[in-house]
Image (cartoon, rainbow, N blue to C red; front, side, top):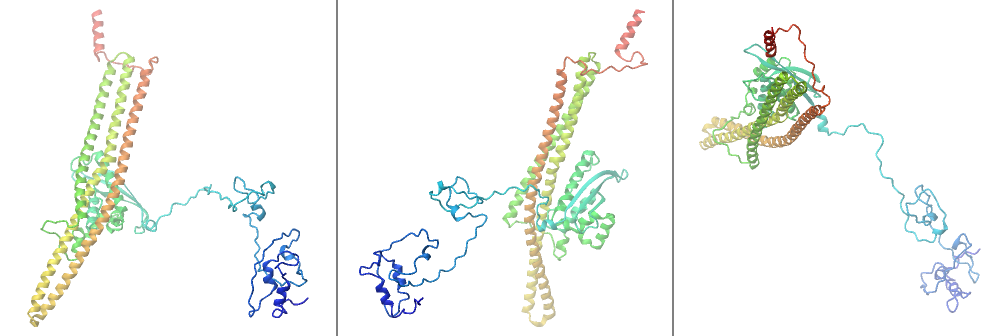
Length: 568
């Protein structure tokens, strides 16, 4: 076999002319493909210009050749060898995946649903239908897992690191003699804080210990709204209702204090909750640090004077609006508390009236001779006793659910106002320190004008000016920090107020509904007994037979005795 590339330069024109006829057609009268003209010339010389001739093209279908165009004759019509075409680059074989269909089945049938990726149907009736691009396999919707997860919802790092407290105040009992009698409470604490020796412990405390805790926390943390204890009461402080209301208020105070992010780390709270010898520890602490018991300890620790004679004028509009709001809120809460007290008094009066009504019905049933009337009267008397108990219980619930929340927030507003007062004192201290600084600077300028004759005095005054500048800086930072702290405290106050009042109103309404349901059920039971007229034993109670009863105990006996005497 001759090399087709041997005579490229010399025989290029001869091969081109012999492969074409006079009319531009091939030997068979058919038009040679334009691609063959280019291919027959092999690789044209760069010196000879290429002549392009447009030729008609005829396509012939190859039916029996499995190799297609590659299986055509290798010789042309004139017996010359055609040039070899450049090799075809390799094509990556497409392997069928489990989720893809074969090429022949992709155009097979256009069914009404998503195609089955694992089934091939050879249906000739659908071969002629045009098909679009193959639809992706269907995706199953996510189904809930049948296995329930027992994991708790994740908490933030801050919440996980925050210690938890569960404090209960209970077991109130009276101790002491007539002159020194008081109520002692058991304070039980469960905590996860590592600052305490144990996770669960119990101590005994009286009311003045709670009051000491409030004053100490308020002095140690200026600007913080400290939950206050209930107020003192000189009259009726040993009554059961008052003791229970105070116990609930003290328990809520401790739990709110322990839940506060700042107050829960206070050392005095730890002393109150954990100390077994509380009075001795407090006295030892006051002897060691006497300034901690004063309300001005935080400001005095910087050497800053507190207090001011001039009237404070609020410069911040935000604080001015909050102060006006708190004054209005306090007035409204006091009016609401007065209305709640009136309602409680009314419920107690209704309970007392129901008790009097029951006593009168019972007295009437005892003198009634007919059992068909005395029985219902006595049953109605018992019903009124139960109604009296419901009214008493509902009055107590109103005090412990809604009234205690109103009283608590009236006291909290007082604590917020004390924080405002501390901020005013910090403002006065700042401006007092600035006035003192101006005086020191005036003395320094005076000494500077006198020259070097007062050098020792000048050094002393310069030191005093530096100390005054330090105090001004500390007082200003304290005032600004207290303002930022109070903003966050008032936001916290608003959030807790909404939650507490919502919970209190819901509990109040639930108690009222339950009380009315109980009354309706008792009245319906009584009416069902009255409707049973055919059964005379519903209200029947057998008479009590008394033996050895002396004559003349009652008016009937005396009347019978007189009749017997007359007959004799």
